[in-house]
Length: 548
Image (cartoon, rainbow, N blue to C red; front, top):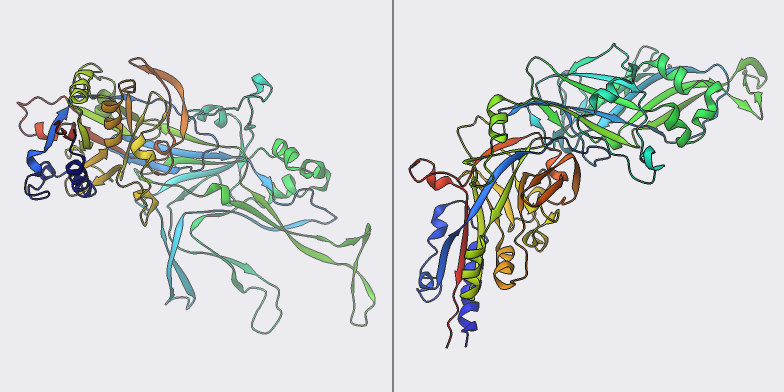
């Protein structure tokens, strides 16, 4: 019979160690004093077979993502420039217009993901400044890029016209030319474009008011509104007066459906500038345009006049001060222009699917991924015949430090390519951390900066393959992830074949990071003494039960 009491002790001892597993090779030397000083005689460690190679992903679906990039980022693998096109919606459709409409000001605001950290008194203005940090960006905040904001005349459909709207419409990362061909005029108040950098400074919108007491004059600009860091630009008043404040066009503003057809949206076009490298994820769907305007006051179709000091009507019609809010909501598309370095392009287009690669390039957006075949049938069968209890199994990916990284990706994600879903180890890991980026830390994939590698645990996946003869040993995919809590997929514009698997999607979390990393693959010869120990390995720790 099996000694389950002994196995239970071994299992919990190993599990405790596994919680803190890192890339350190010393993990292989599990302490011999864990269980009666004899654990090393009971735990067997084996390197299982791994074949892995990288491949380009190609263009990706980018419409209606919950996270969207803006800016231009340069890395050792090339430059990626991200632009954004969105529909717009009236916060209050069917506005009521009268006569003598004049526009006071119009601006657009798109917040960043920020955290307020405190406040301080500005020594120059003596004003209180709220202090913020931006929650995640790529490159340098001080670097600049060129930004154009234009009217979009391309109708962004939600449904595919070819099927009468029954099927959804998809837009892809390289649809730039189609949108660029249907752009209207610049919406910026100060010209066609602006050279800008992302700022973590509080935005203070100032306004001039009529004098109401001796302390305020017509020329005094006071803080009308404080906004968290974000994109903030004054826009062309003439354009918006003609577009949305013309009473003859009221029917176009009667519903948001009519408005979406009439005013088809706003485009944020990014271009590289002076070698700058900066990119982040503005919260576009919380952005808006404000149009502040004045018009005559009417009641039941008749003008309302100002009163004099005696309460008698004058010949001056009363004026009212109004604000129209146009939200940056509706269908939207993130567009990318990708440039590749010669070394990166050569690396991802000369892969060896049979023997595996010596290097694996991972790159976000329309970049590249790694494909893995692990645990060959012969090894699987051998452990099954031994009735092995899998205590721990993990893949270890070392980062090639010969590359000059601006930033090494925080995390990688291993998933089931064949069925387009997470591994069982991912799904059953309910661990959480202070930052959601570190959730599911037992499953792993978090960069170990000390040992310079990623470790992904797939104990349950290997255990199921050993225990159940009818379980399928699926092809695995490795990509970067910006958010480990997201396990949905986005379509590839051009599916590709990997063995018997047709790859049609890529994980969503890989489509919103411009970073890249070069990993050591499994195909490194023993003669390469410097790098052989850094090769990709699948390590399995198991116990062979006693049979009495």
